[in-house]
Length: 301
Length: 323
Image (tube, rainbow over the protein chains, first blue to last red):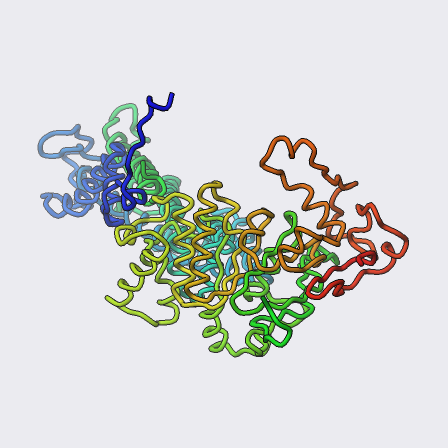
């Protein structure tokens, strides 16, 4: 048997060699995201929607509130790409104005998640004990109050409009993030690499910034990406039932409400804003999923 | 090996660490352990899982606040009287190597930054010098410059453990607590890591507290061995004596469980089987903790807790019947 096997000489330095090319964290992430076709498509769709929302109303000949009773309920044509509504307003402009509102809400929600939610969760988990208990009971009280009631109560002291919705979101929008970040940090803070950092004399603030936050990024990104569609949906829902955006301001919810009333005769009024809102929500979800995988160095194949 | 007048590097006196478990209950993880460690030696600490070995190590290195007792390092008490700055400075003297090479390295940091963490925390090396020092440390543990920009998940278990060792060495410690550094590794890699630790000890005059449950590995590396049972030390002596002449019945049972790598001898190996199982560490009765499972237990054992006493010079045991 012995002669069947030949001893292979392996150089000492080769034994510890790692064949994978050496890339920066960003290059790695981008390479992995690129492999996920759906996520890349979502990213570009969102960029396109964002650009249209920013630029389309600027470069259009019409204004979102300009009425013209001669051309009510026109079907889509070259002059009015998405047609017109019951006052003859251009739906192309109004749809993209509505998208602006939705994206603004999306960014407010994401911003709140990333600031209030992350900090609240992290502080709660790190201090622990009585402070943690009080902070968690406070969250439970907030969650216990139905969202709609908060908004309706707010309407009594604030005018209906985008800022009321923003305030309503900021009362409870960050709660999920705070809970997830707390759970994640509770899990991480007794991991051996955090103990090692403490043994090495690393300060608490450095432990938070270098060990705890980077390891919660996956959870933070995915949750922010899922908060965004739910915030957009909340705005659309409030506008749809008539306590959000007020005429002549457009939001995707208001547009869908208008379209739904004339769905049988003029379906185009409903279809375009509906497509845009679905695209935004689906793309954010797929992109969030892709980003989570791309940002995690352990997911490398 | 050690003389009576030699001053200990580390003295642990009556160390206790209790954890509250629910209402009005405490888990006594470490109950009254005293020991001395001398410069340049390796003290092995063995015992079955859950006996408080790791808790003892973590309390000594100040990861846990001791419930009672004092820890004296180079003649200075370190567990109460140190100011924040002194405590920070002290982290350079005592370091730790962890059990799980997969959990002990931050997956989001490059090996360069992982190893340099101690240097950064103490602000000792910066820029080019920091890089040079990291490469030097990587070479010390048998890795090379090309590994500095890698993430931990690209390494094998043995390589990761060596990165963990390099991280501990970065602050030039005198005393290292090895918390089961080899129990998560393959046998072939275990020898590699043990030999590295021994070599480092020789070169840098390090002192180790080596926590493990693999008796043969502990025998190989340790000068003295302490045996723990349910949070107490039951026997402490130099490693040859412990293996040749164990006096505590628990140690005898433990040693009889080591398999012998010779099938003929192994067949005739006489294993001492202990009666019963490990008692619930939250609810323990009076007297010797081992009395319930000990084949030699008498009434005295069930009433009085045995003290650690010197049965022979340098050979300590906590057993009423030890002679």
